[in-house]
Image (cartoon, rainbow, N blue to C red; front, side, top):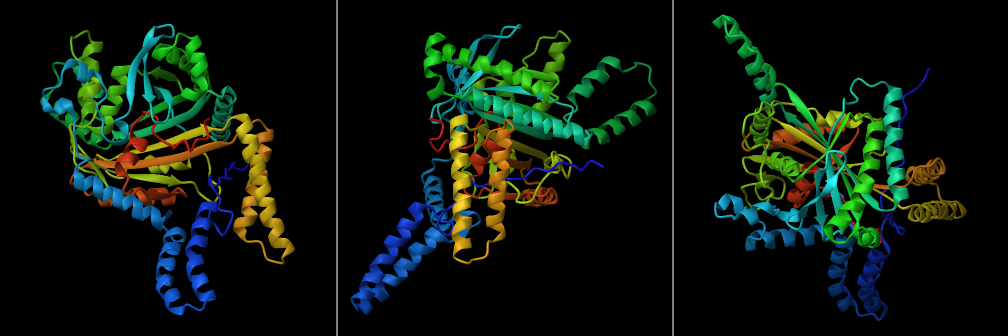
Length: 507
């Protein structure tokens, strides 16, 4: 009998070589310990007693982890968070909400927080239909991105063979992106949102019989209302990003400027679309500026989806209407300073998390439990950000991982110490990744972000608790992004490619 394939072998990006500490942390600890040791060596006991509390405090800040963050990071983050709130830097009100925004201002991106630096442009015509795909520029990270809205049947009814095929297809897509050396980020975002009922209402209006008895009409309306309240739909977005540093020369040859960079980006969109078709995606629609603005707007305010869908239905029937929002009105009308454990935007509240990769093996589709809402009106989102290593960087990193695992194992074995489960797992995972690379795959940086959104005042902590329970049932652990809820919202809810920091490895 065939058994379900499982996946494991994830490892942290940075592994401390000295009792879990990096070289910089070890240096700071040694410098902190040196003054009291020097005083003790000279028999200056009073001076040593005065220096010891300071040394212990510094060592505790560097060494002690609190919820996956070192104590000194908590101190720095809390200080900057409080300064931002006190100075009013984190409060937000859009230009569109003021009512005095000009047409030029409405055409520009106007978003809060980490999204403020984003710029969007209409690229040159793309594909047979000549669509002007919206090109997103992240100046701080040096990325040029495009987003597609995709249609996928899901994997709820897929058997094990089909799920393994999807996993192999995803690995092939990431390997192809690594071989291109231009694509540095692939992000997938799934939003499970309440069904607004607009499409169903439009169909009923077009097909309802005029001579129905009142009792039938009333009963049908009650059934539809109860069904829509419990119904959900899924939105799938895929974002492709290329690096400015890697495409600078090719962009100049393609005409330079934004159009030149867009043309280089377009070369990879067709390849990614073909790979997505192999993953079961039935429709890939690269978003224009209007489409991206709508996706951002419904991210901040899910209630807007009903009106936008109703407008699209009106347009499909040949009636004159406005189907989208300008880019300058895509953000929230007003957002107060983010709280430490939640983010309030318009009339909704979101709690964002980082998805911690599990230590035990997991199966394809295990994250689907996270996306199942527990009560009507709740929205859940999951984003996975992939950054494939270039072939040369992957080989170098793989050699380093194998060397580190073997050195740690040999050092303990020669000195007569017993190997722990963590060290055995590290060696096994390194060997497994090396075998996968020999089979044509590549190393990938991956990060997951998830969020749950409810109308403000609807028990956000209860929703967060149910969300965390769903993740635990799926075998994953969620880390609440305290003091960074607005950044977590951008990474988990909005299809603009905000995800992993670069750490300088793309050069």
